Amino acid sequence: GQQVMQIPQYQHVQEGEDFTTYCNSSTTLSNIQWYKQRPGGHPVFLIQLVKSGEVKKQKRLTFQFGEAKKNSSLHITATQTTDVGTYFCAGQGAQKLVFGQGTRLTINP
Amino acid sequence: GAVVSQHPSWVICKSGTSVKIECRSLDFQATTMFWYRQFPKQSLMLMATSNEGSKATYEQGVEKDKFLINHASLTLSTLTVTSAHPEDSSFYICSARGLAGGTHEQFFGPGTRLTVL
Image 1 (cartoon, rainbow over the protein chains, first blue to last red):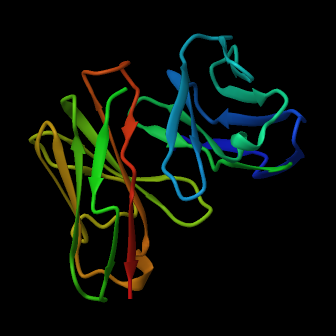
Image 2 (cartoon, chains in turn purple, yellow):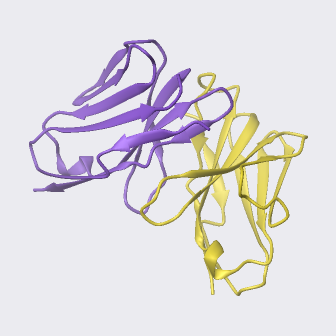
């Protein structure tokens, strides 16, 4: 079945450093979504990418969707303590949304 | 954005009892609702998909007789964990997809933390 792999599992950075998490699907996706979950909270929708090669920016966050629509990345520039949390990608297949394992980001102030 | 609520936000029950969790879309009609389970420090695992007025579709390995799902209206879905055991303790999250937002965007509820003693 459809699988979505996400790396790294954990990332610890100094405040101000950049951070990137990568997502790879075993199948071609109709779209990919990114979510952020703060400790103790629920996933919050960040963005959806639909087009091949699409790049979207939200302030310090840059999201990319691969040309083959099978991989994606989220890059945060100059992290801040408010960026702490777990970032999940979720790939939309034919029938359902499959979540990656998530990347837990911790930041040293 | 669209709002999805869940009730209760947390529940503690004794082993062998049943627990019902409600998921409501507050400002849109949810044609499809999804139920996920998340164990500590793990990802969200889809349990089942329910469409209003029809039987839920369960993922492989999820017991439909243990996790009863009812989607009686376009704004309400319920998950009942029957004869709960300690291994059922988890964070249960629903999401809803409907006419609001994009075609595939799902709006997540705040989750229900279940602890079975």
